[in-house]
Length: 113
Image (cartoon, rainbow, N blue to C red; front, side, top):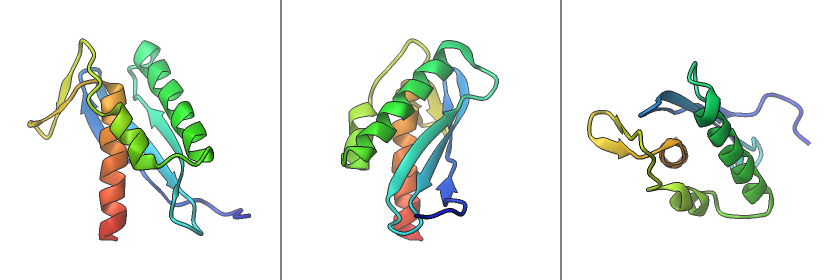
């Protein structure tokens, strides 16, 4: 069992509620995603609670053996009443959609590494 710090990336994604930071933690031995956490900055409230609940479910899905990219695909495209734009051109429809973008960005960074 690994006892040291776990490798993690923290993609930042712009939503209609402001920036969110999605912490994607990888198992140091397998490089597989082991946990996903979210920090919604100063926004707090409902957006923060919804993001935390989504991340808890993502972690449970990973523990159950689900494919992380399949989980991201399930979250992608969910829209709320406050969409945002990442880099001015990528529509981020909700915090769930932002989590999906962050997981995908992490996967692309892992492949490039």
